[in-house]
Length: 168
Ligand code: NI
Image (cartoon, rainbow, N blue to C red; front, side):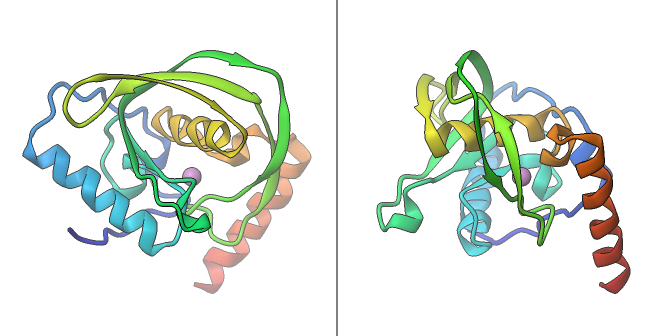
């Protein structure tokens, strides 16, 4: 396994609509494993393939790891099939270093996708897990958390990002 480079805003790969995975081969399994390792090393609780420069519909996440109960998940071609309620909570993104901001998301979601064995997976999630799933699936659409903010807030954050980039 290997730790991959995480693409940062404003890298254009983060704005592409990712392609569906057609079949799970050794290369894809390796990518998923590398993504998990990259996520743990960051450290983060979720990562989408475009964030490591692969415009493919694959996400990894683990919301238990920081509580000492690792539960790695890989989802291929994930789709939100139902959502309910609303919840506002603070979010960050490994592609937007130093940015933490409140984002409104559905409180509960049902997500369908496939695991690395090609089996269909249906997940019912709420709380942090629901948030991570929505955040990572947004990445597959080329969407970042800043796109979910008010225009005033977006303007403030983009200014901050521009400043951080200039100082890099
Ligand atoms: Ni992110």
